[in-house]
Image (cartoon, rainbow over all chains, first blue to last red; front, side, top):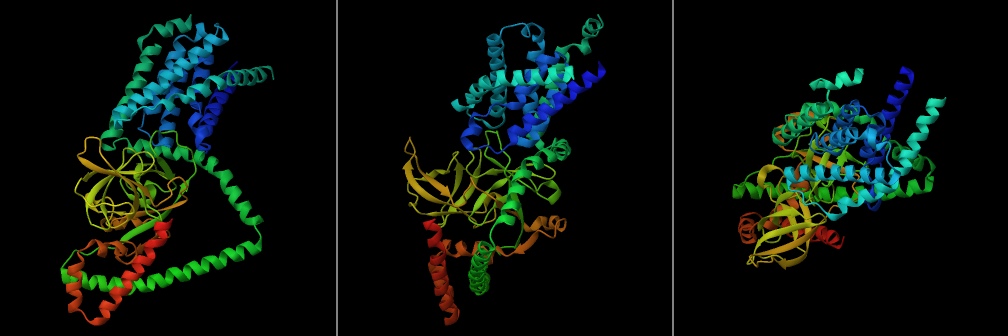
Length: 162
Length: 341
């Protein structure tokens, strides 16, 4: 039991680190505009799966790491990711029962919330005017989420069976 | 049952944890925004983050090394010859500049004008990691450990790029001059008129030129040295178009920077002479240049009143006047290729 727990923990950290690497990867400009917030997707997945408040601390730590990497105000990504993790956590048990489409809509709502929090922080700190294309990542996130969930579920199942 | 019990305690409830974490984030943000109190935390975290950056940069490094290994010897020889020619060219220009710098110094002492102190520079390489921030940032591979400080001027061979915005331990984020939150005090080289240049996201935007101000398409903008962040006389941009502000109180102009900001590879960092002891830390990468000989000199004189120069030249011997003519030629020669670019 504890071995599996450890394995899951390791998988969680690896997947989030991989998500951050995807964010850092030098995409071409047009693709970078459409790029979903990978780390937020991963945090949402793990909050949903683990249904444990521990993920909130993980979200906080990786949020700070993202802040340092992106040169943003220290705590900006931390704040939005912790909020995301908390919201998912609150209704995780219910959400794991819901249909595919409902879950997808909820994920989009969480990610939208994440974008709004970051935009508000930007606005307060340096009067950033939100642009319409800030919402483009939601579109890609909607396309990516089902595959991401499927992939992570498969990895977990194979790890449990082996 | 056990989980239920632990959830009933106040300190164990998710809401409590959530609020505590958000509160910590809030405190961090305020500390970071106001007076750099969070800098130690940022330093520590940036050490932990370094492997991630290295992983991203690694494939590109490998690519460059293999490209070098595979490239033909003939190509290398050709490139070598080209570089030698460029070096000869540059050395010629430096030779001309030495006499000009001496002359400049003499004229300045006659005018009892302030001297330009030599600057300390160091070279940094731009990392190719992606930035999802709404700010226009580039990441360079030097940080606090190399003696950088927030607000330090960053330029490349073509012109000013921006200034250091956020510091990590071994890397730093440079905000570009075209960012909407960036402003830089400038002067128009042709007339010496001073104003402030703002970024507008893509280009540089002058929005506070008086309607009577003399500005034309093709004017070169150089830094004016006000505000003590950028040394005086660094090239910034060329005016591309003119307009009038909507309420007709100011003229506005759009200028495009000389430096190609979307494909930067290496940049220069500048230390003002006061903080020179910092470069003791990395003597390998630093060198002292005299801006009045290399950068500053080209623009300083033209901005000055020409008649005064003439008056002073009359006192000097005829040789000086000749050099002055050469100087003007050099000046025009130097400016044209850049205007074509």
